[in-house]
Length: 220
Length: 285
Image (tube, rainbow over all chains, first blue to last red; front, side, top):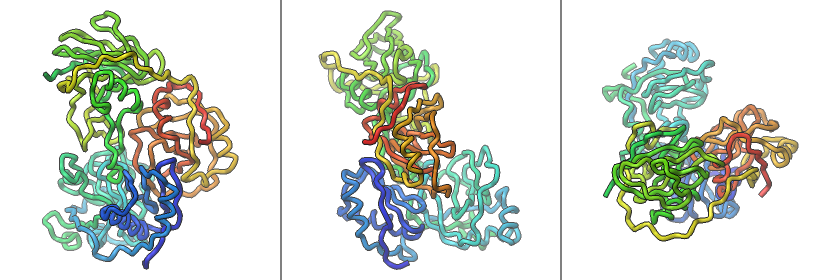
């Protein structure tokens, strides 16, 4: 990706602006630019900066039209490779959908972890539950649909796949994602008593590693 | 002196609410907070509290509380009978409740949500800077159950002498000014005309997450899937059944159904007080 501009910006009510980007990569770059300008004090006031799959919502904006004119003029540099903090998530690849995922990927079940653990991911956005991050980084040919029938209960710590995303469930909820593994102790994912409540914040890079600290591929 | 209130009757749904926890939407945390914020603030002002001090928000059936020390309360929001040990007491004005007496906040006569402010404020443990119960993600104190204890702080100031406060009456008809977008282009012109001309009704399936409506479905022109995107308070989201849902304070921070329009925030307090069956009109504005 080269330097880019936001594609369009739609007002969302009187005090918010939904900025639309062509893809996840440009969204990450635009989101990083918003945070840079906010930290530098050059961004007009906003109360919420909420990235989505291909959008960044700026909420609590006094003048969305003026904000739209401003952001559409930005030259946004790409996110450099290796930019951003890396969080390691220990995972055992023992999920109940491992065999289905292996069949769809055309690999043996014991190879799913090696594949999944070989990529570096990025938290594209959060949602669904506090601390639930949607991680991009899985190559296109490994994208999977959701399960036809959602589970009424997915355990906390489940490592899961759906569409282009990987995720780790911070707590037990219903869910329709394909479950491939387990984070043995999911408590660090969400701890509102901690200064940084969510482990996986938008922009954070993520690696899945074996519970003993080795890379996922070594453990699979 | 701090006090504790025992929930003698928790009511259908009674939660602790304050100004909520905005600023964490990017972590998937709803803003939460009192749905009828003006009512919460007015009840607090009557007691000399900080306007955003935590209060109890009841739903339709009120609640009953017994303090272990003498306290002063003000009940506002949805009008309802108020009694102390069975004797009628004022609604919308400071009321003294002696230690051991039972304050009964009755069922809403009109509207949905009454607010019980206590001098000194409710001091439940804050999470991310707010004491609010968030029913979508389960942050903050659990909804009140019979026998629960509600901690109350020490009043910072004496209760002011105040004239009766003006309370807006609950709406017979809910008129919601909307601005189209951000995804109005996912709908046909006919659907947009329907939105601002048809009469909807508040669905009984409404809650703190969203005010659901019944009425003519809005037809989409774009059948694709909307990639998850950030959602604002007051968003009018259109799920596959076509009936608009107005996002209230416990709304999900991202969503995958298109938002046809956004309701102006000042109108949401009235939306929170509109019982099931109330006619709803969306007007351009």
